[in-house]
Image 1 (tube, one colour):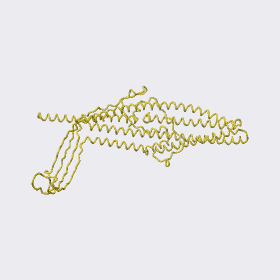
Image 2: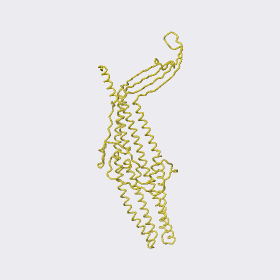
Image 3: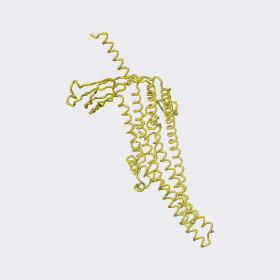
Image 4: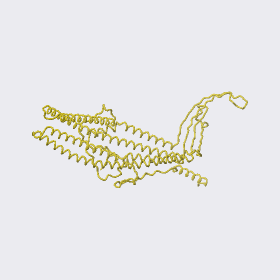
Length: 472
């Protein structure tokens, strides 16, 4: 039967275990609610980031094999993405370092020392002390441990884990941005290729017009002003072609950089743009936004700052440390591990803050201000996410209307060019009427190419705004 003293001792032990296991100063983290920021047509709830949810190869929605190959190359070789991956590894290592402080530090420090003492040491005792040679053999285990009474170490680990999660979210954001940039630059490259082909056709038509008008001017059928105007239009068309080629080179170089290659060794397979417009399903839920890595990173940074408040407040309380040593000490190697050579020591210590000129208070205020800043940043990120989605949805709808209207205009211009060709071939119309109609058709076709490329790029922006593609 337990004595009263034993019961009291066991009660103190249980209280100490409970204290060590549960006490942690500072606020416990609660995920933020952004429902007040949510547009009426969106459904929102307390933040539950799911940026790790698989998004798949969302770019396959464009059904373009060349784009698929470029995306794979970018994911495999982009240097910015590799740097982001290295930052994730560093953040995880920091979290592991914070976790290690929850446990004692134990080291084995065997040593040997040989020394000679002085025969003439300074001493108030008037007798001779002979000089000696002394050997010392030691085989100690050293222990150091901070008893985490107030949760400083645990809060530090919480902050480090949150920072590691934020690093992973930042990596996913870099990946999403990378794949979106590859798609946008690829669409631009293909549209510039198509425009360049049309510009070359326009240059040929202008050159034909110059030849015809020069012949007619020589025959006195047209004035020199008309021939000079045709030459000016030819020069303008050639300059426009050169500008498009320049833009194409820039888009090509940008793609090479995104794919981690030098432009000289980079190739993009030729061919027309096979990308199809993005079909947006109705009723997209706001939960899709929870896959956005930037929202997840902002939420994790908020959690890290919340934990740092606890770390700062723990400095108000005493720090309890435990150091100890156990091992063997002997003057001879042969008796080092004898029972009489066994030594040990234990040295608990308490450090109590008395005066720090307001340093701890300033650190707490700094952590609380950092938390408020992170909360505002999180809410701003959510607002920006809704804006980007709404912009992309409106852009897709309006770009579709633009393309539809331009398609009708192009059809009309093509019909006019066909009629002008028929009149010219029948001898009822002039060659200049035919070339003017053909140039008009080419201009409308160029506008159609540009609008279609912008519509496709807007689809990419929607995917990026939603944090990736969407399922059924």
